[in-house]
Length: 118
Image (cartoon, rainbow, N blue to C red):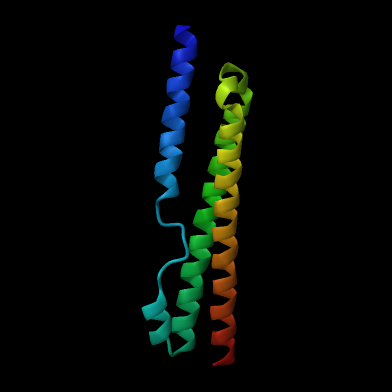
């Protein structure tokens, strides 16, 4: 019973850390004032670089969540009550960060296209 409590405490800790990471800044940056003020090719390319970096950060979060999900799956038999919810949590977290990465890449492409047109 004590081993199960330790494992459960570990799962709670991991989920708490992932939840904290999920709230950090990997969303598309609020660059509306920078976008409105971007007039030169260099400014648009700088914005594109910021969006590319945000996409890379989101990709890192995807890899982190996939690793955590893999570790959890190895031990899911220890907590069968929460197995389905935990699997859904990791799937949703991975999807969330994949969408953030995709959005940032699209924004970067848009800024690169604007810069190419100048």
